[in-house]
Image 1 (cartoon, one colour):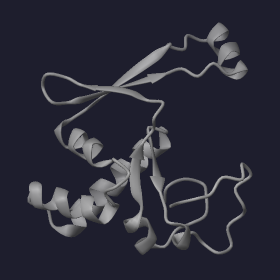
Image 2 (tube, one colour; image 1 turned 180 degrees about the horizontal axis):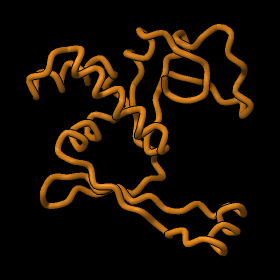
Image 3 (cartoon, helix red, strand yellow; image 1 turned 60 degrees about the horizontal axis):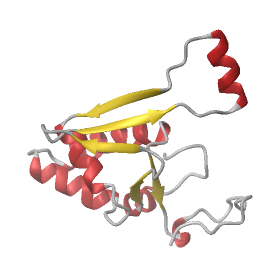
Image 4 (cartoon, helix red, strand yellow; image 1 turned 90 degrees about the vertical axis):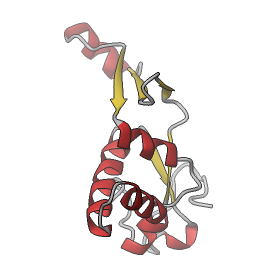
Length: 139
């Protein structure tokens, strides 16, 4: 669900903990909305594309009330299951509605690399390839 890596079980995915990308700049505006600033990377491919096409230096993404609430919960300590319950209780949604909406939203943020997911080592599939960086996965 969370990318092109090994597939997690549903239970493992619900135990995972979303965490904000440290490299992403963000502020909370006066309306309580979160404003995320995404900067253009300076790889050689992007530099060539920027000479041919107009590629902005930065883009901003304004999260609405619920998006800002989800952003606040993406602290690396709150798991997806707790987030689903919290959102359902706060917005009078049943568990399935809350789960579907939240997972779709987290998937979008993950695809944009605005956030990642902390997964316990024990929840990783046994047939996964080793991380080429040599870094440990999960807690």
